[in-house]
Structure formats: C-alpha cells, structure tokens
Image 1 (tube, one colour):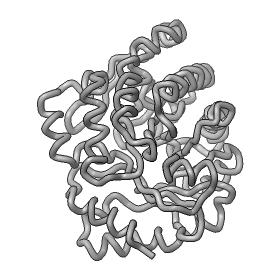
Image 2 (cartoon, rainbow, N blue to C red):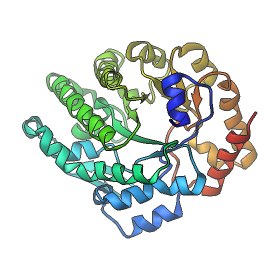
Image 3 (cartoon, rainbow, N blue to C red):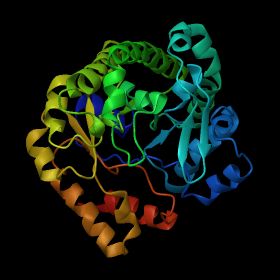
Image 4 (cartoon, helix red, strand yellow):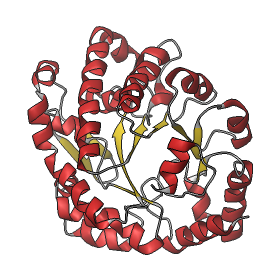
Length: 335
C-alpha cells in the first residue's frame, strides 16, 4: 500500500507528495511528444503514449503517486460531443444534444474509453506496488458547464441561460453521475487505486443552487466510491468557506484545498477528513526562497494531521522542472 493510500484509508500521518498536472506541459519530455501529436483527444486515446507521459514525472522525481494522463472532457467526448482544444482558447465542445445524450448506452461509453483503461493497465504493470495510480473525473456540474457552455466570456455564470435550462439540468447531472460511476469502476478494474473528483467550476454556482448542483452530485459519487472501497479525493474549487458545508455534507475521504483557502482555517474547520494541497502554483514561479517559505506554511500547519502535499491547482506550463524537484526535496527533508 502506498503512503497516499495509508493516509487516505487509515488516516496515517506519513509523508506523501504528488502534483496536479504533474504529467504535462512544463516537462520538456512531454512537449516533445505533444509536438508530434497535435490532436489532444487522440493523444489521450493513445494507450502507449498516455502511459509513457504518466510515468515521466515518476522517472524524473520518484513521486509517491502517478496520475494517469487524460482529461476530464473525455467523459463528454464518450457521451457523443466533439471536443477540440484550441490554442490560447482552451476546450471547445460541439453543441449539446439532449436527446442524443440520453440515448448513449454504457457499453458504447466504455468502448470509446477503452484506450484510457488500457493505458491504466499498461501503467500499473510498470509501477512498483508501493506507488498509487491516481485517476480523475470531472464532477457532474463542472462537466455540465463545458457541455452546455453556461459561462460567459469573463468566466462568469450566464444566469439567464441557467434559468432557461433549469428543468434539464437535474436530468443531465443524474445521467452524468451514472456514467461517472461506471467510468470509476472501469478504471479501478484496470488497476487504478485512488480517484480525484474535480469540481473545478463549483465556485460559479449561486448559493441557492450549491446543494443541488455541487453537494448532492458529489455525494452520490463519493457514496459509490465508499460502497466499493475506493479511496476518494474531492476538489470543490472556488467555494471558499463553503468547503466546511461541503465536507460535512459529502464526507469524502480527502478534500483538496484551492489556493484561496487559509491553511489555518482549513485545519480548524475541516474535520474528519484528510487534507491535501493548497500551495499556489504561482509560488513555483517565485524566487526559490519565496517558494520554500510559501510551502513551509502548509507543511508546518499540517505536520501533525493526515495531509498530502500538493498544489491548489495544476502545475503551470511555465514552471521550471528543476524548481519542482527542489520543492519535492524540501518537503521530503522537512522535519
């Protein structure tokens, strides 16, 4: 059992470190592969390359856990939407077809994503047993934001569009829960150990909807994980002090902190849960002493409770790989 699993499952206070987007754009070895593979979706569906990318940071830093190279938008892709990644603009999805979405069956969904599951099988065989293999999903609300395009150009929620869709939203969220649970089961059966649930756009939800659109869908997925003894980490990014309500309602095994959450507040208010992350990815762009001072704030605050060292979001493309190595070394040697 890996240190990550010991912390999450047994609430041990041993050391564990991994980073969101640890396999990706900041690594020159990744950029070399990416330069030869322009279509991002096809790259995610290339089992051999996906596995190779997953293992790149393990080879470079000997991290405690690998996280499979994929994307949360592989779910809407498997549910019938075209997904394109446009340079300097991000993902663009084809128009959402409600009837087509409801007609997708589980067998078809699993077949489309079979290369992802194959990548997990390949990676698990290459990883030593004491290292976890993490997989991830987008939470239903966050996927819906992309699928139905209910953000405006300023990354704010289009409330008029939300109100017009109100009757359909519950149906879409419930259907997404079903397919996400299937996606989780398939990845566990392929050899993965831990799931992180990214609710990256939870901070957009108006307070009157947060229970229905954030807490309840996450709870359904966490309950599924608990029934199947799957260690789970929730990341309800951007909900600020509602982290406390989320934790009490959803009761995940672990909760990942975004960079806006004060670590002292988290330690005092988030009980009966493993804490993870919090360090601002921008800290790795600062002078080394400043970066280490920022990291020390989290490591020192959480040193006597179950805590997984990570960031408040993903590593930035402009991050120096050597700086990542320095941060890992600092954490491992901290006493």
